[in-house]
Image 1 (cartoon, helix red, strand yellow):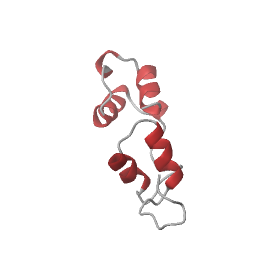
Image 2 (tube, helix red, strand yellow):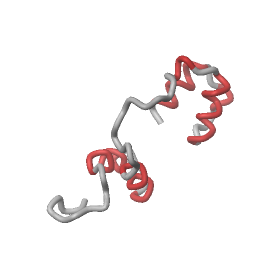
Image 3 (cartoon, one colour):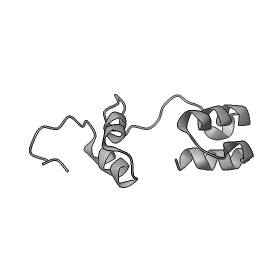
Amino acid sequence: MPDKNTSSRIKNEDQYEKLREKGYSKQKAARIANTDKAGKKGGQASSYEERTKKELMDKARQVGIKGRSKMSKDDLIHALRNN
């Protein structure tokens, strides 16, 4: 972990550390933590419950969730939220 007193290229250190604890690579965690809205919630996307199963399947494919073809809508929502 970088020294807190030195300048870091990570915009959101807390998010970066949590992602690393989840097993994300250093590069992927840094990319996520350095986005413009890193760690901020409240985007304009509709809630998963409002989306169709096809929309959820497409999103699951984008993020690489395996076994999605056998999942129900509720299972997809759970998998997307906990990925």
